[in-house]
Length: 129
Image 1 (cartoon, rainbow, N blue to C red):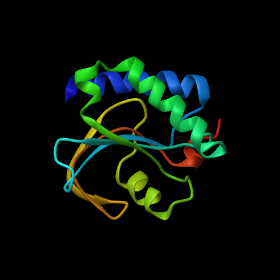
Image 2 (cartoon, rainbow, N blue to C red):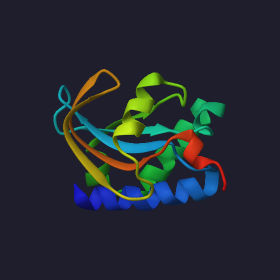
Image 3 (tube, one colour):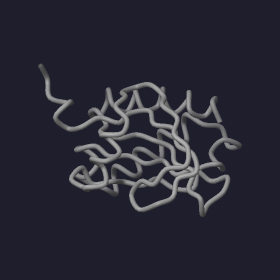
Image 4 (cartoon, helix red, strand yellow):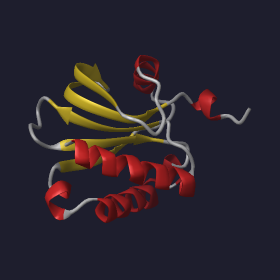
């Protein structure tokens, strides 16, 4: 899994440079979906056009991962920046373009067996200095 996370870290950095920074970019392994990971993303630009954003992210993931790695991904979950549950995640972990690992947690009303957070930042943190 570490190799997939490294590839997704590079893809996340590329997408952030092209489209804008993420509030959250993470991989979640839900309790109810063993061996299938969700890619969880939140960013202001994602909600402007969800369909186009989903297609863009999907294309980037396909370009970054080989077929054996892609089949480990279940879905891409787009989270609204104003989702109250997002704040809890951002409060728990603050990271950008790195990796933080979490086990046995509850986020977005889902039991998460394992998670890798690549970016988890509040929107206020995105403002230029």
